Length: 138
Image (cartoon, rainbow, N blue to C red; front, side):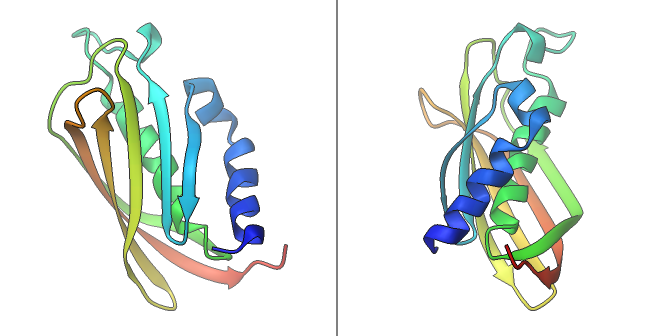
């Protein structure tokens, strides 16, 4: 990934006010790959006292969005699916790692694993597909 592309991903991440509100941050990025992280706090808990599925989906979707837009083309999600495997708890630091699985001129598919930092337990898996449009000229 060129320095220009890394800067673009960092700029996209910095401009995401929703993810900043949730406490998520960009940890690493590369071609078709990003790593983001967030800590589960009391505002991220559901009525059962475990991490809300919407928070997990949002964290995975953040990694997905950044990875899919890392190549210098506008990419818009057209499909996303998540499987919740294990409950995350208050205080858990979660990491979502997105990796490109397939890529053509117009479509690309990504797999995202959300893991708990302390033991690398897979909390959720997310698969997303994007439609890629025009080249960016930034």
